[in-house]
Image (cartoon, rainbow, N blue to C red; front, side):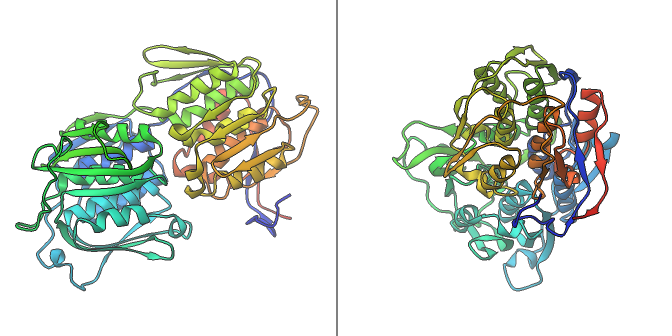
Length: 486
């Protein structure tokens, strides 16, 4: 039953029940990576020429990015069911009036609840120059963006401000581009702040006579470089490496510097100005989405092969398989696929800072281990689409598990004496409009009868066909429930 935190206290929305059955066996190729798609869209939009992106993801987050880019003059054609996107880059120069940073009307750009869209565009549009307001849904206006705003305030020739309390969107931009070449950014809340600054840096063309001097140091790089220093901890580092690889594919020069740093620096990125080149770009299947299918094998003792990914994939979330291996599963890598075979599992103590989008997936897997699992290093998960520590703990407790919540993660104790097809907990689990809550929690139904997931349509944010693909993989239909009064 929904608790006092529930949005369904008076009425339950449509829900889905994944049914227990045989061990999951099969082969699947998830859709394209959201992270790669939205990074490639930014680079292609500001490139000189026409780029073709193949293997792109069609979802709410990528549609929001495409719509926002179209609204500022980027020509984008989508075909092949969303898997191919042609981008006519090089946005036309804003007029002198638009670049004035004055008080003319702001152009409204809608970002829904897409963190990549608001963070990447906020940075890129300040480097490009113009007057914009980036706003979204209520939850977006509760998600912090202050570290990014503070970094951009150091260089914008004009103003940028997050207008909601505590440094949250909407974001108002009135500027003529960047006037500086050195930035500091905090990395403890989201690596997307750094990624946004990195992708914006090639676009920077500082006002003549208003360029900040480069420091004389071994990290200063070439005189036409933008230097971005990360102060303190940097979470989700693999996503930064991914950003650099995408940028290089579009002709940018990016260097990640880790030697000779100041005491409070964890990384310095040197990016040369000069824009992007148009190109043809292939996008990998989404490794975060793949985690649900590898988890299905682990939970049921089956064997699932995910095609299109390898141990050397650009996306750090393929390392989720290494955690499953630590728990006792068998993992087989090939050049173009990864297979996970379920085995009796034990609990682990694991730092998931670099693969934090798979924490919810692992939490459900951990319910079926023979001992507790401690997840560390993911305090920043509280600032995602929902509080992915507190809200996750609340829902797992509904399944009968003991959960200890920590500042940087949680401890999951396994369910006792699960008897397939005999013990039904009839749990109704909230998703908090978070696509990863819906996809991960649904996997509990592979072993526990009666688990219902509310608002399954929220998976449209990154994986609209998730439940259809899961149904095909497991070889049996889900039970769908219409709206009903409590």
